Length: 79
View: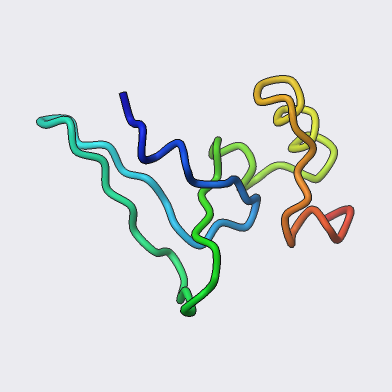
């Protein structure tokens, strides 16, 4: 359904966000911070990752998407 959106990687400190239109099938990607040329554009797979502590984020991502996040925020190990 949203084939092109499936190419975005996850980050718990995303630099972009997806927005879905309620009146058409369009999906929008907006930068939420400056993105330099060559930087990877990443989104948060779930908004929970924006507010939860490290251990909870890791549990949710492992349970739902079957991966261990190693984004710049998770590389710190806690927050």
